[in-house]
Image (cartoon, rainbow, N blue to C red; front, side):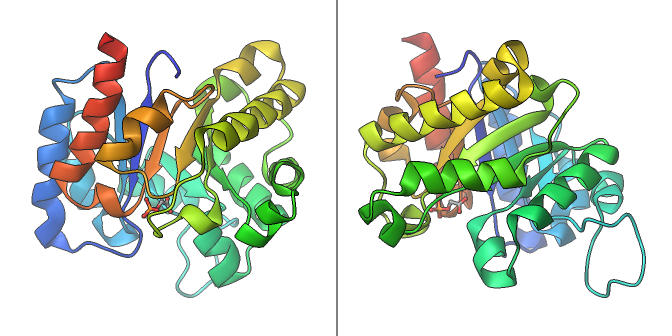
Length: 254
Ligand code: PGA
């Protein structure tokens, strides 16, 4: 695990103002847990409100448009989410790729727009169960990242994180084996070093996502090359999310 693990909650299309109390509770605990970097990506509608509540945790968006502004009804630009208080954006989540037809090139264009707006990136990748069972998971994921990541990023180690999320593990209660996660993360690390150089490529945090819960977080976070977690369902309450954060804290102390 990286020196300072990065635990990110992805609220997906969940949350109204009634959930601000959860964000507040997460933030208050994170203030005492400086060994772990904690962040939340609420829906667009809550970014500003969570930003106002939060003193410690990072706030991000779950997507942005590739254009800075214009006639794109229903879309939200990187500059807009930055203006609302977001410091990072999750891009290329499989629910965007599958549900909205986002291609690698779309993700790469959005990443460029986000960097222009001063945002950090969490770029997601992952394979279907059919691809894994056919033995093509590593080739698929590395090709996906080749097409989705920006060619160059100033301070890539600081501004980029990659989240490996096997699609069949998202929201299903199934997780990849630690051996499979370690193999994939090593392949992603090699790609990052080839792309951004030894120094910066070594610093990029590679997160695991897909049914991370308090009771499996320790095992996943102790896996070779896992620098944190991208958490969906278990990030919706402070209690379960903080259970994952505490697993990361305990491992720093161990
Ligand atoms: P999950 O979602 O933790 O609910 O599986 C993870 C994600 O999609 O980021």
